[in-house]
Image 1 (cartoon, rainbow, N blue to C red):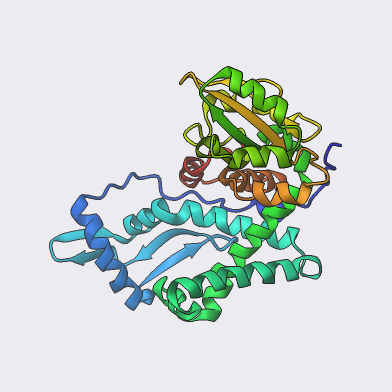
Image 2 (cartoon, rainbow, N blue to C red):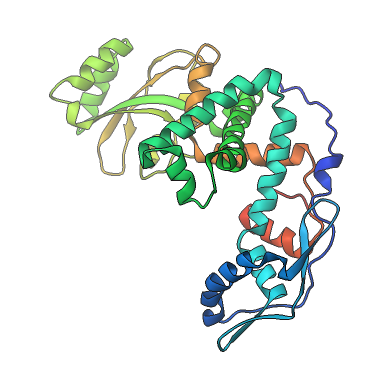
Length: 329
């Protein structure tokens, strides 16, 4: 069944940036770039020494004040420094801010807060296992305290995961069509006659699992679990992947009736399971959530839904360099 489309108020997401940054091209020598690391510390210590101009959306567009920042024999203009930061992180920051605003819109607290809290806990538990405490991890990333770290990084990251899960649930049928997912197990043998014999023997998943453990086949047996159209051929043999759409379209669990001949002259028997995509929807959603392409798919979907637009040419170019589908021309 086609996913239901809903109308949304996009006005607050369309005016991300309207004032063009000064068009004068700025270049930095390698020595200048190296000195910027020092300059940022100097500027951070006397931030009021110059002005950052913002538009109505709060996005910085121009730096003014003292003409130059000078350190030794290297001169870097503050506008140049600003544009350097724009090139390095401004585009991603703009996308992150827009996506976080969309997440706040899509995930009302009353419905999604428990899921967000659960994801926050998972993230913080991982930080504890890595650094001993959330505070140590936050400090290592430059945050002044856990509260700030949680507000500015952990919670937005958790919301992004919850929003991706919402996308997977609501766009499930479209994702199945685009990714042709299937759960497969294989046994690879030297002779076609042996492969044909295994197909006759594998009358159930239990039987196939026993064959996989048999000493005659165990060294060449593999449970790939979920594979999709995005699975790399270094992981899944190309000849097997070429039949993915057939595996995905199977209505019942069972052995694929045709032996797959590899370029190495070996023969593969494939068992397909979890074929009922409605009954196993939660399993599919959980495993599809680990496919890296799904993250960008979700971002593109919601940015388009809210008509994410950037009017500044320089910033727009930088964002399209991250992902050309983030913005519609």
